[in-house]
Every structure is written in C-alpha cells, then in structure tokens.
Image 1: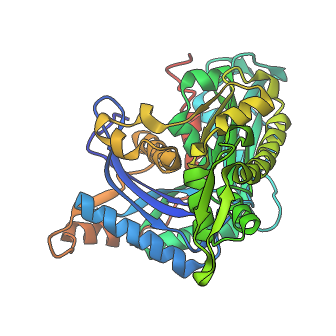
Image 2 (image 1 turned 30 degrees about the vertical axis):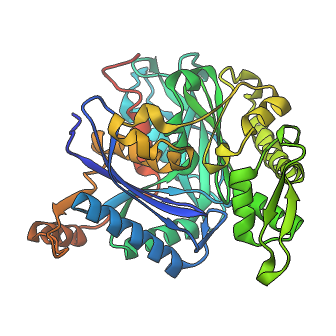
Length: 444
C-alpha cells in the first residue's frame, strides 16, 4: 500500500511516571513529524500496570485533549503500549501441512501458521499479545535463510517467540483509553516499540540487546539476524532507586528524585569525593547534608541489581555471546550519569544511549529527541507501518472548530463504526504485519 504523507498516527504510552500522547505523520523522506505532543503525571499506574482506573483516565484525557488542541484534529484511535511485570514469553514450535504433493510456499501459508499460534493453550487469565517467528523449516529441514517464500515442500514449520500477558491488564488499558474517547487500534509490547525508535537495522542484524529503563519497569529485547529473539519486562526501574535514596538518606520522595536526577552517579568511583549536597529538612527540621559519594553508592547498588536481572534475561536468550553490537540503553534511566560506564565495566559489552533521532524529522528533533520518549515515538512508527500495510486507518478525523466541536463528518463516521462488529483480535494485526516481511514478490 502506498504511503500517504497526510495520514496521521496517534500513540499513547501509559508509563509508571508519565502518560504520553503523540500525534504525528510521515514526512516525504519517511521520518516522523510530531504535530501534537503532551505528557501528564501518572498516578494510577504501578510497575507498568494500571492500579487506579479513574486517575489513569484523567491523565489520558488530559494528554489527548491537549494534543487535539495543538493539532486541530480529533483523535479517534491510537496505538497503545503494554508492559508490566505480568508480561512473559515462551518458545513454541508449530507446523502446517501444505498437501500430499510438494507445494510452493506463499505468504498466506506463513500467515496461517502464525495465526494458528494464537490458538495454543495458555494459563487461565492470560492472552497472547505477539507471535514472533524465529526460524523456519521445510519438511523438517531447518532453513539457513529465514525466508521460505517460493520454496517447495509438504510441511512448513517454525519456532516462535510468543509474548503473553494478563487479559485483565489489556482490558484495563482499553477501558481507560476508550473512556477518553479513543479506540485502541493495537496493543504493542513496549520494548518492541522502543527498539523501533532507537535501534538501527545494522544493530539488529549484528546482534544487540535493547534495555529500556523506565520508572516502574525495565524492558528488554534481544535481536539477532534482524529478528527478535527474546523479550522480557523486569519489575524494577528508576522509581526503586528513588525509594532507596529516600530511605537511605531519610528525606522526602521529591528531594530524593531531584538528588537522583541532578546529582546522581551510577558509578560510585566517578562521583566527587568531597562534595556535599544540602537537602531541606522535613517540616522545619535542620537541613541534611548528603555526600555525593554516598549517594552514588546507593544508586550503584540498586542499578547493579537491575542490571543483574537484565543480564540473566540476556543469557536466557542464548544469544549473550552473539551481541556484536552490544547493548543500547534508553528510557529515562539511561540519562543517569555513568550508567554506560557501569554496564561496560560489569559486562564488557559495547554500550550506547539510544535516542530516537534517526526516526524524527529535523523539525521534531529539538523538542523530542530524548530517551524517555523512545517508547511513544516507537509506537507511532509501528502504527504508521500498520497503516501503510492496510491494517489500520488514519488515527484522526475532522478539524475541530474554535468552540471545540467536531464536524458532522466525524459524527457520521463514529456512528458508522459503532454499528459494525469489531474484528480486532488481540495481537492479530501484528501477525499480519510480520507476515508482510516475507512478501511474495520480493523473496530477498
């Protein structure tokens, strides 16, 4: 499907520390131009999971209305991220019989094989979010090339990486977004979205681990030969470091957060040895004096624990020794001083901070090229891919007038959509997009 440079995409990142809504469109050179952007404090989400519906709805509504006001457009649907400690993954093998005679493998066969994986049994209360093919086999012979299109065989098989999450968590997300007047076009695993925003094709090919250090969770995705090999959500993030500082220094939460962001070091040996920071006392008490070296010690201890969990997940992927491109870190936690040096010191990998600069047009770079916005930008980019592939339509409609009322055209479209039965199945659109990686007319 041809790209439409006037097609808009909306994305919503429901984070533990902030809710972010983005509205953008693709430029002529294929980059993302952000035309509306808003953030709000997140008070209803803990460790990536919604704990308070009302508070989350308020944050979503605030950001959506602000973005609509900035762009003069009405958001009717959005691509929304999902994460949280309930996310886990499994490996599974599946196959389909093509026939008694040798049959040419087509894109439709791969699509059928992927769709079958959504029907495998999972625990009660769980739903399959994504099905990601790892490798293919024809008649029990594994392919060196991961593209079976055009080959002949009687049986097509594949190993899959299957991402699973709680059904209730997905429904809570959809409910909050729906109450803000927006439909969920697709739920997308957040580490996949962050990867889309900050990783290069060369890094995915060579082998790389993406670590997104957020407020409530740390998300991880491992790539090799251009394919997702492993994903994980670790239930620790920057907030637990703030909590450690609060308790260790016996200060208020807001002061602990400021200390972490403005004076924190991830490596104790790199912090100034003789510098003292004065923090206001609680309720008129005497101010506290805190050594920057001691502060760095608190931060390093917790950061090392988070990294130990991440390294365990990388080793569990069986690709720890194949990461030629090393590690890319993003998210708000990536801005902590010396965190790159800490990872290099502990693991020996090459490390860089991931910025979404390669995916943004020049007009959007100055305001939005920050690691903490990688997820929402990645959601927007993946949403554009879905729209280009014909799996979704433009996320906006109608220009609002000065009174904030939308046109009759928008009302008619909404009424028409309400009468149509929903065809969305959790994760199915993502499967369709994956299958298009193996286009019938482009074997290579």
